[in-house]
Image 1: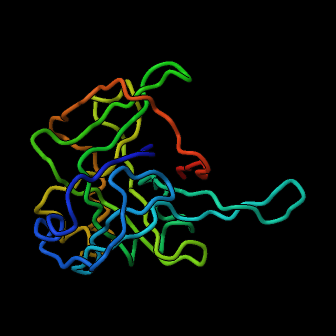
Image 2: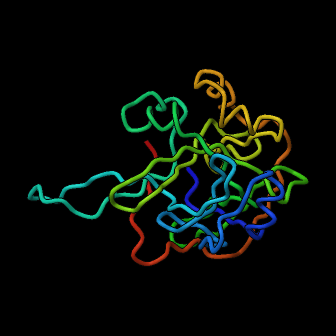
Length: 208
């Protein structure tokens, strides 16, 4: 699953690329972790939302505790109660420069970044909804990984070709589901020595 990605483009550049209007003063992070703000394209607008659907949790004694941020939605789970309404009615585009996966031994993991070769800004298929806990939130749709990264993780985000952006957001759900497929093209891979360090206080991400 994807628990970290980055967006190095300004909101105005995102708006130009996606032929959308940017919300003034949109507050978002360049490196996006679960619970951070990222940009999404919804109904022709570039907006900031919180990454991760809140999943209610209970403590040992049944008391409500802090929700878990569910950042990724498996394509084979999109018809379950947690995702169905959002996938059928509220699909969005997530502008991304690259996403990261951890690689290496426990406690010594480093970041390896992935992106479609030759692309400095691309779209991942997302879904969104309004939540009581965190306001508007979004999640990425995940599919089986490309052979190029299968040794690192068995899942990757849905990468959308430019000509499929409108189909993803506006077409009927069954047609959009047909776009949930593994990226067939080459991936640019940047294996770094940056430590894979979870931010303090972050709710543990989930994929369901």
